[in-house]
Image (tube, rainbow, N blue to C red; front, top):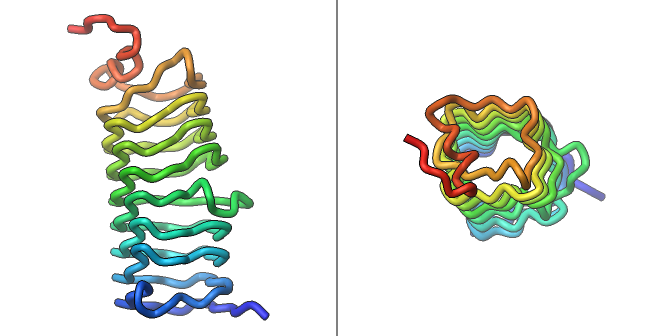
Length: 189
């Protein structure tokens, strides 16, 4: 029988030493918890917040994230593409997501706010209506991605080839438009 945890708070727990219980965490809050290199697979997180947590290299295979907020979390090398795609919905604010993967996920309307997204894999990802507010996308891979109607106006260091991605209705600013033209090897002054 699966465990169900409703409206619980978890503070300063090191899940690399204390194994997280399998089950459904509904409307829970995790603050200053360490999930680094842990097996957090086959767990359901619903309407849950993670604040100041370390998820670096955590294994989240088949875990569900439904209406989950990550705030000021370190999430380096997380393979989100291995989690349960059903009703997947995130918000990331002030997070370090370098080297993570969203490969082939359908995560429209995702908000990335003040995040470091260097070398993140967005290949074949559906990110329509998403927001990349003040995000560093240096080395992020957009290939056959659908980023239509997404907001990149304050994003920087991105390289997105319009020939290999869907961009219709996207929002960009004059200062970062070069990120759409890098692959064309033209000089912009």
